[in-house]
Length: 171
Image (cartoon, rainbow, N blue to C red; front, side):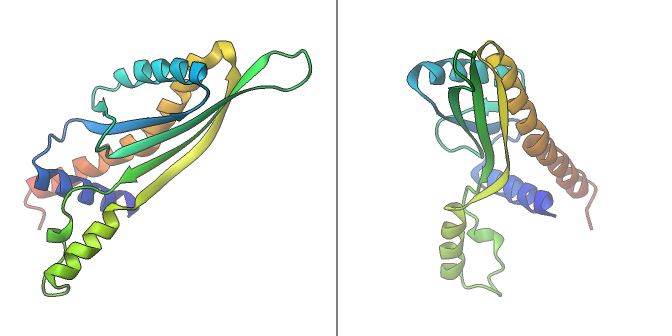
């Protein structure tokens, strides 16, 4: 149910704004020391380029991938390890006020409620990946694969269902 509601809000808000439905706008927000952040940024950009329906953006994302990366050493003299903690969130966007029935909610109240909803994020999940420093590319690939399967695949399915239902008369 959560996926269907999210997809309907996503499709409706995109239609209201006249946006292209072919690209999901994703913002990757990294927290790490400068050197590690640069390496992670490049690795994530390479991985997301492999997803044809994703555009990496810094403003107005539909989805946010937050990643905190740290380097650590388990024991004295051992090799450095990488820990990536990540979370996925969906952002409500567009003017949602027209989605509320004016018979149930006065237009001004609908606008205030829609503005409140736009300040919220819907949590889609989180996780942790560990790797050796030589395994940064694979660690980033694992995070992007998790994001793709948990967030984007579910939205793709829901959007296809909404399009299929509406395209076939959906009554």
